[in-house]
Length: 80
Image (cartoon, rainbow, N blue to C red; front, side, top):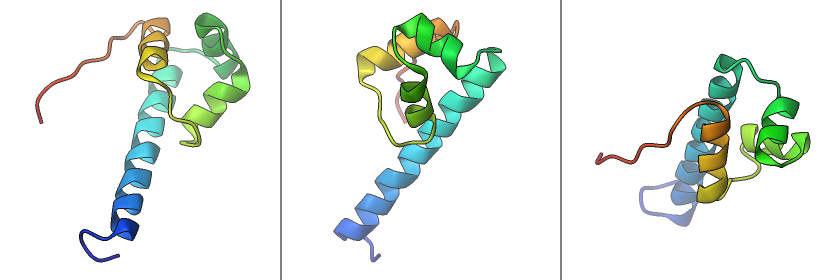
C-alpha cells in the first residue's frame, strides 16, 4: 500500500512480527533447545513456543524476558 495507509502500516507490523519470530527461533536453536525444552523452562506448552516462532503469537514483555533468560540471554533496549 501507499505510504501512510493502514494497509502499509499493517504490512510493516507483520514484517516486524516475522522478523522478531525468526530471531527467537534462531536463538532457541543456537541455545540447543527444543521447543518442548524451552516451553518447560518458561512454564508454557510447546504449542505456545511454536506460535511465537511462527509470528502467530506475540509474547508479552514479561514472557519475552522469561524466554530470553531460559536461553541464557538478556533483552536489551537501546536507542535506534
